[in-house]
Length: 278
Image (cartoon, rainbow, N blue to C red; front, side, top):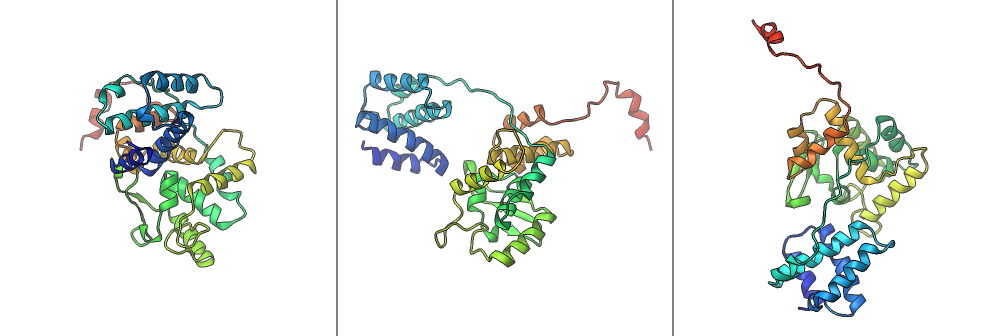
């Protein structure tokens, strides 16, 4: 199988665009390194390359992981499950999500000079959007009468509905009036294209640098902050899972470890039982 056909099969297998990019980039570098399609390489060459990645200071753990997962999928697509099994198992590194406090979020939203950038940061935080969701969001997806935002075909090919902030509605109406975007909420440089993921990352980095925030935040930190602040404000974990679009409730439960709650003193339910008597 050629490298081009391999990428086509990964796309047809239903993987997201970001997954395709990550797997494709790692497999392309592997192909260039050996000047051969990755699935045609013998085990010793693959192991040599993975060992090089693992021990290199120039490659992140995420890049190593994408290479392993990309290879595993590639082998499965060509019916070589036997080779996929021999790839190294990856132990998940568990870390708590980084969260901004409310003062830091207010500072970020108010810092950009351009209205478009202020609305972009406010929208991602207020709705808990992934960066790709913010990039692809169209004006038709925001219902200002019903006060909802429809996020279409995101991760795991799922739709979801999240509430539209009243403050954001006012900001969006003002932004539409002055900027007049077409189709997408945030247009890119090319006519008819959305603002790219890279552009959003650049806007966030530039904004962060203009503040005194010392945390190593990125765009996804706004989503973490959204989830944590909602938990602290009393939203239950099942509702939060739906708002975030998580497939697995355990992913949502991670936010319980960073949210700040007032602990209820241990007691017997009998002590309060008759307070509810009518």
